[in-house]
Amino acid sequence: MAVNLKNLPDEELLYGVKTCQGCGVTLAARLALKVLGERTCLATPACCFAATTTVYPQSSIFVNNAITAFPALASTISGMAVAAEALGWDEDITFLGIAGDGGTVDIGLQALSGAAERNDNIIYICVDNEAYMNTGNQRSGVTSYKAWTTTTPTGPCSKGEKNRFKKSLFEIMAAHRVPYTATASVAYPKDFMEKVEKAKNIKGCKVIHVMTPCPTGWGYDPAVTVRTAKLAVECGLWYLAEFENNEFKFNFVPKEFKPVEEYLKLQRRFRHLDESDYREIEANRDIEWNRMRKRFA
Image 1 (cartoon, rainbow, N blue to C red):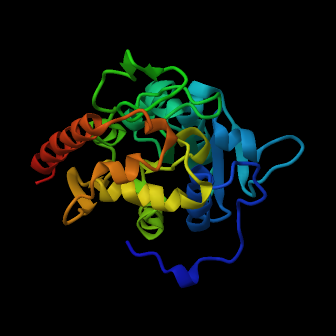
Image 2 (cartoon, helix red, strand yellow):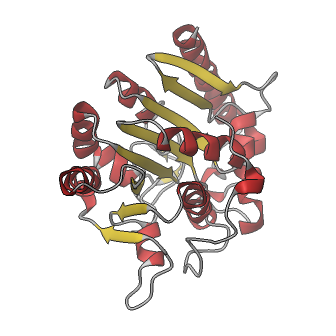
């Protein structure tokens, strides 16, 4: 579903935030609200986004917004959607949840699984900066292999966690047979906004997992957030895909992957890696792509 960029409203529903410069999460939330419009009821759990947009007595969010307990985002927006239906609210109101990766793939996964099983009429967006950034950069279930965090120390005896592959929220949600789930990136805004628009027009549980780089936690120049996110896709360390009508499809496949070190060397969290690490990460990437190509065929 194409988004007509010329028809998007001039009004911004997210501005004046207290996030770090170059924050990918803020960019994703702004784009999503731009598409969904003011008839949106939002909820967010503990995360960078909540902590920097709703500092009492100020708010940078110009739609209805509730702050939830860390594990309860999906439960909260499910309740909001059901309550609105019982009250006879107009069907064009969107119930949106925005949560970080820790609050989604770890702490909030049970509630999201329940919402997916019930097929509640919600949109859930996971803004993924690959760690618990709001509390100081602790590892989450989708932290990149061999990345430094405060809970994955690196040095002569360790290069981080030993698990080579991240949790695949996209495939976990597809296994629930939700009507729509997708991956996205702030480096591909039109693709992301089209997925949000598509989710808005589908009834049931929709989940979008969007990569949102973090200059503070990842350790790169805030000016290159979009470049960093784009390199992740071009190197094959992130992908753009959809699951709809029980079918998987890629939205973009690079003709040839760029070397992974182009992406990794931009970031301080990978500065301990050497040539053998790059090749290992590259091999892991190829294993994942070969597996997905077979599944998406």
